[in-house]
Each structure stands twice: as C-alpha cells, then as structure tokens.
Length: 196
Image 1 (tube, rainbow, N blue to C red):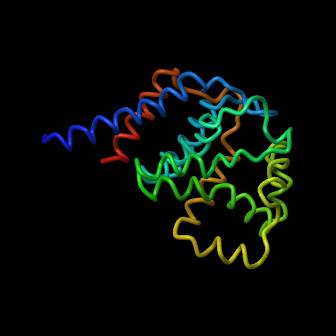
Image 2: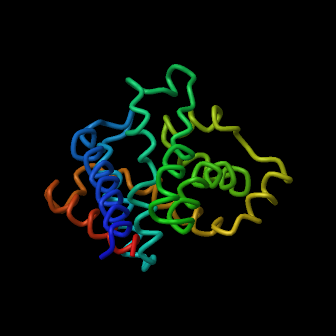
Image 3: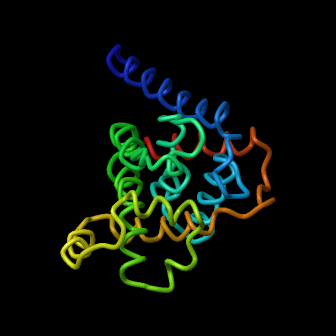
C-alpha cells in the first residue's frame, strides 16, 4: 500500500470510528415521545431494511438516517422549541464522501419522503408519532404538486420512501435482539462493506 492509500485508509477508519462513537456515547439518548433510544431506532431500521432484502447501501442508510441528530446534539427535543435541526442534511453531508450517493441521498431525502407520503396518502399522517407530526410542520408540511414532482424526479426517491417506512416502523419498545457491542460491530461491518 502506497503512502497516499495508507493515509486515505487511516482517515476512513477515523471517520468510521467517529460514527461508531456517536452511537456508543450518544446512542442511549431517547427520542422524545418514543419508546426507543437512538441506537435502538437505528438498529431496528437497519434490521427492517435487511429483512426486506435491501442492498448494503440502503441498509446502511437505514442505520444512519438520523446520525445528524447525534452530530448536532441539540439539548432536549428541538421540535418542542420550534427548531428543525436539519438532521437529514447534516447526516447526508457527512455520509456522502464516505459512502457515496446510494447511502447519502436516501438519508437526505427521508424527511421529504415523509412530506410526500403525507401528501399522497392521507391515512399516513394519522400514523405519525407526535414528534414526527410536530416536526412535519417545521420541515415544510404538505407538498405542493410541483414539490411532489420534484421529489419523484430524484434518483433515490424510491429508496427514500422505503427508508421512511422503516423509520416509522423502527420505534418498537423492547425490540433489540443484539447486545450494544454486537449491534455496533454489525454497523462497523456494514460501513466497511459499503465503503469498499
């Protein structure tokens, strides 16, 4: 391995370690009004993607879609203060140089996917959690027909819709079959597979 490849590999390893540390040290943080922690929610979304036959990139996107919440680390619940932490953009900007568009773009679009589903499926809105409903207004609310068409034109919009469904389903109390260490080891292996 030449020097440049070694340096690039070392930097990639450090970035993976940083992501793992965010879940290791911030993963016990509860979602407001939800019966799961950040790590449990990430694990559940990743498992739902895996059980649905999603490819490695979409599994990783499902795991890391809310990474921006941990990165921003706003105290309490930002939506209760009327704040949108733009976690989807923060996470996508972190993930894009590490894993490419197939991971980053579904993450970037998962909030738009919620807006799209609320617009195109009226029953969907009734299934949203209280915090997700509160954040919907901060994130733009119902889409216009032009916004819907623009969303549908995005290359990863179908993956974002799948991710959004897993995001909504991945909030089950007491569904966490792995130890914390095993979950983080699985995430690390997934990151390594997606980066190669």
